[in-house]
Image (cartoon, rainbow, N blue to C red; front, side, top):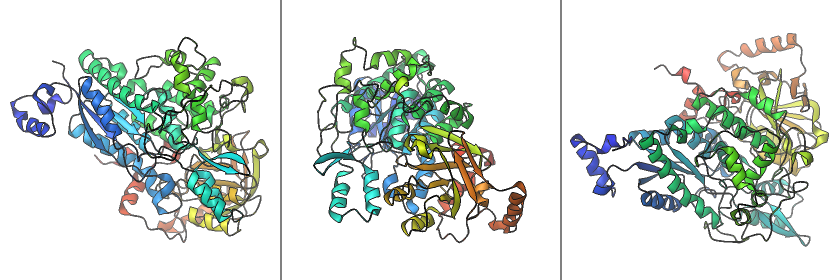
Length: 616
């Protein structure tokens, strides 16, 4: 009989009490000896990306049982960044990543579970589950709830596609009438699923495909489409097959730490750069590297960002394309195929299907005429009906988007730029690095300099923007919003979106030791490391200081002399215990967030917890 982890709780006379409890959950005599597989769900009624997940765990469970396993479902938390954004609730978002990973570890190890299927979707949930899978290193399969359909409104007799960002922009635009605003608000998020652009949630679900822990289509098949149901059913079959192969045949290749390697993380980062994904993915990939003890650092990302072309633009980088359009053009493997043609990927890595990336690209390439299923697979599209019911429509496009010149996915020859949609900037202001989403920046703004306008919080910056305290040419500095200084490293979509609403998004820059939403556009530099709370130079900026940003040269600089810097450091240190803390900021910090701040590292390390501070 194979030795499963769960055998600890179900074998032997001394486990009679445990078996009695298992029986009370529905386990029968014939089940003992089968692998116990957890279905880790993140259903919640708070989040549109998760509102439809309530019954989807049952789909996976049924397939697990049919395939010879014991299925047991449990839930973890999920925070909606869009709802939490713009107020103190956003302080809890990034720290929830660690709570999710911890809660899964607790449940899995406490019950000696053999394997797990992770049903995720949104910003911190997918990363938290990925960290847990690496920490536990048991067979794992990821399946997301899928993206929502793009919103659509009729304006001046034209159908215009919109999303969440449009609602925020027009909400702050005094020139938008209440009637039009109401129309946009009611149409921006029409269905269940993660927001329809290449924001953080969809970026991570796409990257999970490239990493190899999720099935093809995980990031791009719409939440409402019947085809997504197939992913959930297949996940149940694949996890049982991989679990038995590991425990019965000692095939370690199906384990997360065998699948997630430095090459895998590089492939994922290359994909993210090529598609102009969210800057938050950098945090999460660095955190994954830390969890798996892989030597993957900001320097690796910087190197990749200089040689990977920008092949794909999705909202918010463009209003033309959303996730439904990316799927129609070949999905993630459409982008990976183009990257593979120019030899940027390590295609020897393998995935949960036990295929190499090379074989998977070939199989799912939209141009592979031998795989006739691909046409049906990639023509699934939006139903155009407001709903929170998954798998409720079966609309199909009558043709695919194979245009690699002007289409959603471009070939290297017709790339938007030779270097990709993300860039790492360094300089005296960010000695350990900072990050900018170049996919959303006009070529005219690749070099920018201006006087600093310094704010000790996102709230102060938003007030200044909305009350015309910020002028064209300013560099807005928002500090003490990093992992430690926030604490929690708030995601800041509102300041950048409000700049857009008043027409300054191309005339101002914004830099912060905090982070941005995947929906952010414009000259927005985040993750400045070291952060202000860790004595970074950003803490010593004064109003009026000249700051220059050169994306072409990958530099960010505060123009003060070393003598002046030393004077300012001494002045700051005279504040004693209050040194390198925000001045006059009214923010209530809970004990939970204080605990997080004690252990949180800066963004260049993925904002993970510094385990060296643990005394044990």
